[in-house]
Length: 143
Image 1 (cartoon, rainbow, N blue to C red):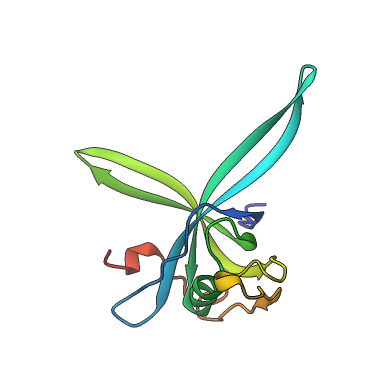
Image 2: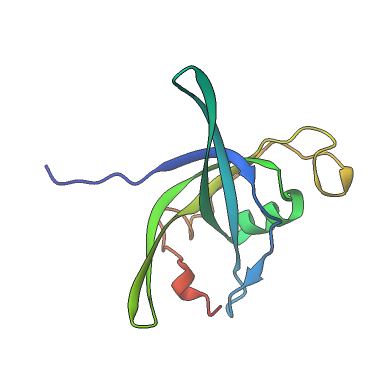
């Protein structure tokens, strides 16, 4: 039985402020960094282990992220893995990242940009950006 399943669920904090760019066609896109912390016991002491992941958000999801989130904001992301490949100085380069398709803002009152409240709601998946529609990748963005 040959089938595949590509789903990622992450909950962590943003490592930098959100900056939205737009494709020539007017579609919003942003790349955010997330950090996920985990405590584990190593011998007799507890050790913090941090994993850093880059996440690309498209369309209205990218705009909502830029409007409500800033460095340090907690965020829940659901999406898929994507392997980027490019060539630099004659060497093939690879980077595994997440294409975020749905987000949930996790902040509480007083944690948003400008000191206001950060709503906790689900940004619905835009059919043109979801797994059932056409997929957008950074190859579509001339940056």
